Amino acid sequence: MDIDSSPYRRELETAIQVAQTAAHISREVLAAAQADVAPGSFDLVKDDLSPVTVADFAIQALLTRALSEAFPGDGFIGEESADELRQNPALLSRVLGVLTRCAGDSVQFRDADDLCQVIDSCATLSPGAGPGRIWVFDPIDGTKTFIRGEQYAINIALLEAGRQVMSVVACPLLSMNAASPVTDASVDPTGKGCILYAVRGFGAYARPLYVGPGEDIQPPRRLPRHADAATSPGDLRSVTCWALLDSGVDVVHKGVAERLHVPFPGCDLLGWVPRWVVLALGAGNMTVWVYKKRSRLAKIWDHAGAMLLFEEVGGMITDVDGRDIDLAAGRKLEANFGFVAAPRSIHHIVLRAVHDTLRETGKEELLG
Image: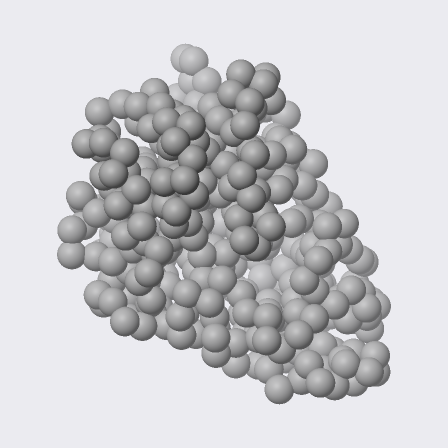
């Protein structure tokens, strides 16, 4: 089935268009910071110690306003609240400024209060307690690497009754032809970046994000169901976060790869959305993530939609306990612990390797 015949054609076209504008915002903010034109763009720190940028706020406001105007009956979930903006007038001014320069007349905000209200409209809704259709945003996934001019992504997901039905992901610095091993420093030398999108049951697609002067827009490339071709552990290729590992259990991640004789770390990326993208593109086909504590929960905006890209190329995703990922459980994935993603036909082998490695390394308390 061709994606143009899907029932989400209008949603997809709208989301792709706004994602391209969001990518333009991210590039302008990054270029200004690198040139030190706007000192202080990256000087704010949230309570979870990750940096917050002008781009995070501007993109969340852009996505919410544009998509709420197009689909007024839908709900919206985003990572940011406007508390920091209200406390920092200079930052608020920068956000309004970059929206005016990059979005023009495509979205408009009456004033600073209107901007803050739009951002806050995403900050409280829970996927199990809102409208049947909910959009989930991560305006900048991989903020730490974004600051360094390395890999990051803009994630847009549409859920219906807690189920992923559509995904649009913009990766301004990642080539759609990136070959393994992909790392945070694997910046597209052509400057084109890529945009990926998928509709459940209609496949996943990729095309360059940017078109140069005089160039024609390339038709999208349907991504092959490469994960279906993997039938034994020897076909597995890892995607993980190793160089900047913080929340995961290093001995388990490495131990699983060694048990399965998979080169490690393979593709090494900080942001979860870029990891799902790299899995969809075929530079890898397996990822395992075991948090250091059972109380640690994943956040919905790091995974919703982006996971659909891998599923549409034949991947299967569960948590460490083998349960399906429940996207209706809350803004944090309260019904799940960690992730195990692999080709569907051999997912059970990878899951068993995770359990065996946890027992072997004395981490039985992390088993459900």
